[in-house]
Length: 95
Image (cartoon, rainbow, N blue to C red):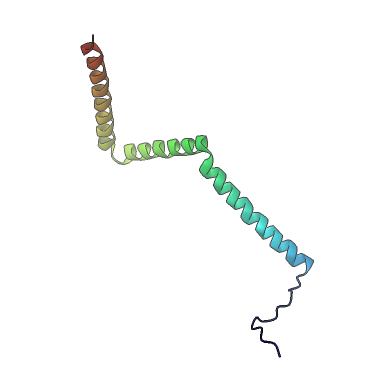
């Protein structure tokens, strides 16, 4: 009589085809994981994708609501002009 409460396990026997199929699935999962890691860590590619996404968004906004796009452009130009004016004024005041 044994006092060990662990069930006896017998090794599972798989056919060669099953093992190859399992290895192929593991390779595919690993390839997918590596592709996802490369996608996240490839900074130039991320910049390119986000630039395209931003440009597409601006084109859609221009098609859907041209006045909103004009307002955004005017606001951005005013902000840039103010920053340049402030910088030039600061440099000239220091002289």
